[in-house]
Every structure is written in C-alpha cells, then in structure tokens.
Image (cartoon, rainbow, N blue to C red):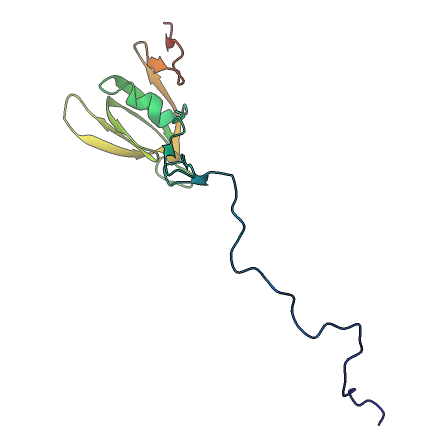
Length: 139
C-alpha cells in the first residue's frame, strides 16, 4: 500500500527511552540557605557577611532628627508641579520619607519617587559601609 505506515521500525531507531537516574549524584558544593549563607555536608551553616549598601534611605536614617529641605517634583500636576518641604527628618524607608513641621507638628509622608534632592543646613552623618572611616560632609 502506498502511504501506509510500516508495521516494524527500522533497526537504527531506538524503541525505548534510555534509563534515567532517579537520584542525582552527590555534589561537593555546599547548599545555599535563605540567609545567604551555606550548609556544609556536616550540617554546619557558614554565614556570608552582610553587605551594607549606600542607598538614600540609609543615609537619611543616619541623619534622623535633623532639619531637611526636600525638593519634590510632581509631573502632570496642573496646580503645582514642584514643591519644597522643610521639616525634621523622622523616618525613611525604601520608598518614602517622613518629616514633621517643628512649628505645627504636622507630619508629611513623602514618596521617594517624587524626590529630586535634599539639602541640610548642618553637617551630615555619613558612614561608609565595610568598616571604613566615617565621613562628615564639609560646610
């Protein structure tokens, strides 16, 4: 018959999948743990030193309690597209800054997304990571 499938497979076509191991061979590499360290074959946890990075939020946290002037921009705002806030720096997070007006006590929660820059009228506390000497900005 023309176009019919052959009843037997040619000799060079494998008829079964090759055997796959059910377990992986043991490796000598330590296993990672959720803290960033490793577990040795004996079960001991080897910690990896934490690395501090110089993000704006960390610099702001080193200067809590100081008076800061924050320059913010708000795109597509018909009433005001730029605004300046001045107050005591109370808190800083990855995406926000909290300041308070020392006269009225009013608190402002400002988004880092809108932050252009910050000025301080006094020297900043700024300690570089990794145990290096701390720096204070000059006046």
